[in-house]
Length: 202
Image 1: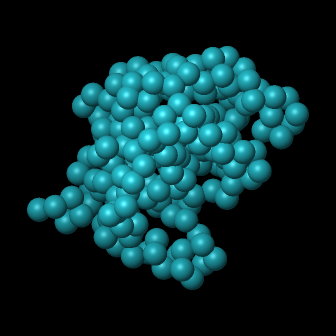
Image 2: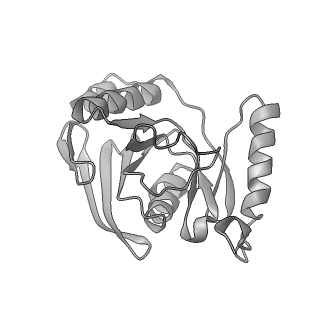
């Protein structure tokens, strides 16, 4: 039995293949509506604003400067969680360039180096980005999860996934320097995040 064929958990709203059909229809017929399926629950990917987009562009540029062989892919669909029953669209997915050339809409997370989420101003942010996704990404074996938490004014780095949980978690306020461990191996000066927040745009 493949991951896609596995039955959903008892509390799941639908099977993964049912979600995929629904997500494709929503994106096609509902003006690009982006859906996710995490911990057996249907969710809507929040619309981004200018600061959110700027943060992703900033991270993309830093990743390319650090290693031109890597790319930070925006909203790349991933099969996540144990048995790949979930479906997520991280704001950023760091992987070697060309890694997704043969992938469909939903790719296996094997070979992904880091998932990135930037919080949006919606009611689901706490549960989705701070609780559900760290667990889901760790279960998927993604080595590093970077959360840019605009509400808290800090970045949190999760690493060392073991048996469905990240063993290391480090938070730093905007403006501080934070290290992303291997296999990313990048040091971030988060001063731009503090500047944007102080300007009242975060």
